[in-house]
Length: 98
Image (cartoon, rainbow, N blue to C red; front, side, top):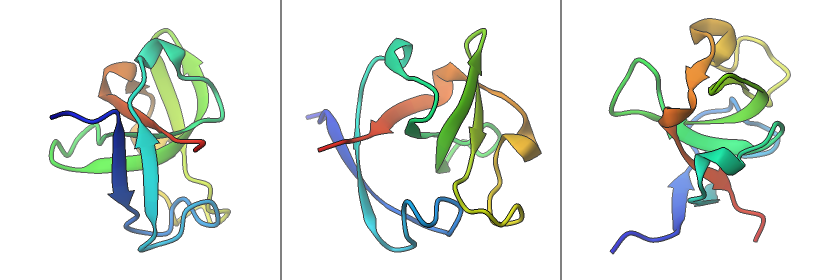
């Protein structure tokens, strides 16, 4: 049965201090048309099909997302600065506010 919620273990420091390495984050599946700038999202990596990533949406333009990590160290996150904007079709879920 496919649940509306997903629990994801954080791997890495790209979203520190919001999400810490080894912690479990709860994500909620919502329609991709409802995502907004500023939300933390879970999505498939644009070039590694078996990898899911957690990033914050910095901008949305023409069905594409510009994603960034929260870590202030620019070398701590592989994000849209490295791989460019990604198609919203890669979106899986949004960080739950529950």
